[in-house]
Length: 582
Image (cartoon, rainbow, N blue to C red; front, side):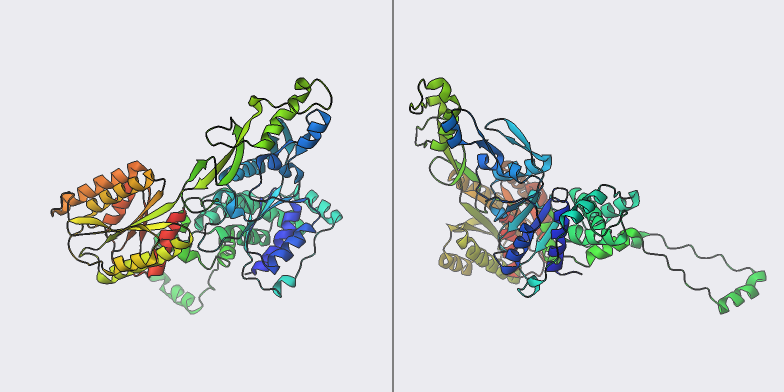
């Protein structure tokens, strides 16, 4: 298994040959000597390298009107956008985890189509570029959007690379060598067996996106061209599996097919006439036949050799089935504003009712019309009301995690203690994110708000310490109370998320009386009510031996289901935070 820095060096060569075909590189690293060394090597490859800030505006990105020249010359003069300037090169995106959805959509559209359309002037330019996205997020923060990462062939984590290791540098291809490699790359074609092998390995590792085997195939071809080969060999496929498929793995490959294969039929009983011959053959047994490993097994072994070390934890927390991560923060849903927040592209409108005039966009709209409006040279710029553009902003709404805790008799005291500890840890994490936590406890014949939405650690600990255990399990009442709480929060502009900690064994009806059958029916009815509102939810099954009742309720609620037997409070809190981010 190669180390991260060795893979990063090889990625530079691959990117130099085919930046657009490989998509690019996702670089997980904060500001460090290793990252700066790698970026300096990227600059030295001889490719156009453009740096795109995450807060870039639309006209700088796609192209638009050069305002100063247009006003000076009295005619529309185009300003080429950053993506068009990066044609046949690389776009470096620092802090890619903070890209807004609008910027991300425009970036990916240009990347997929290989061209960019400047909306302001209606011009189209070729824009085939590779991406180097610098993900500076911490482990407990949402990283770059999954729809961005899946388009990039190489995923590398440089956080653990030390300074000494980063001094080892690979030599870039010269202009003559690069031309020869690119010429050879056009001739390389994969066989059907090789393509099938990459697809089967991707399936075995739980990779759903077809982009992964396609990128792996492209990388294998580039790797073969660099090594002056006209045909793909196992070495090329193994390297592609290690660099492309292994970091994307979401599960360990199963051996169910091999285990379910029928056993070989027993040999027929020996004839009496052949007994002597059989005895002779037993004295000199033939050598065991060894079948060569299939191409799929060889590639799979290479991928397994470099699986991410945290894969099992990611699977346990449901990361393999997660929704695409947010690329613009982890608080609440985005809300439009005229006064504060992250700037958005301006729109036509009048500066009334608190809206502010966007001066630059207004001048851009008026500039092409000056010849028609001004009669004499040197006359002041003529601006009309139809030129007005107003500023727009988007800010994140506050978020609140509603934790509904089962404190009934079916919740073991040890599990209840773990849930209390998880809420305290979650509260500490939420404090730094400006989020709040609301705790609902349900037992006996009632569900009550134990802790209103708060970020106070002192109040939370006092409330949790006084939470008793025992009694019936009124899940329907808990879901009803949580739904009402979520609706109230939404009316205040707060995004709710429900985390249910229960084994799902309802035995108290919505009216507060006993009866398992009716209690389960009431719970299912309120689970549907929750789903109808479209709120996000996570169900953590606290049963020592899950029976399926909690999972049934989670499915009806359209919630993420997570069985967590014998798990620590920290992992429970991590699961809640993971669901909140997604």
